[in-house]
Image (tube, rainbow, N blue to C red; front, side, top):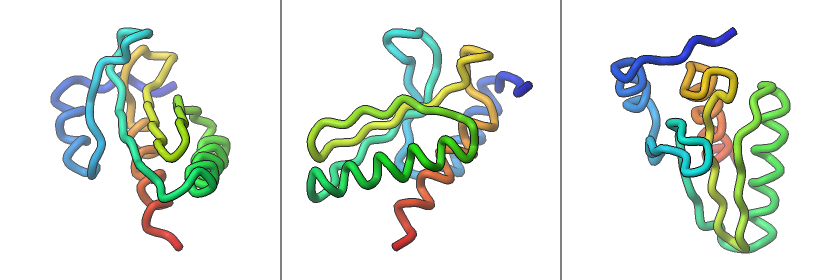
Length: 102
């Protein structure tokens, strides 16, 4: 079981991420990590969506992924603790690695 991070730990972990924001999920009222991308085409957005889905399966940690034509948004939090854990930051970092690999 992963433990819910305290605000000071979240603040420190955020410094290791680029382009991610910390927000409160409107529906679940829990803190989450959020990042959006505008891809060059619908096909590119679908490809990135699929890459994120495969990564999520590998890590057994499933984010909320929203797709609207070329816009892709990801929100990550740990449902079991209704907050953020190290697992969320590991997934965010792995998603960023997708952006840098050809």
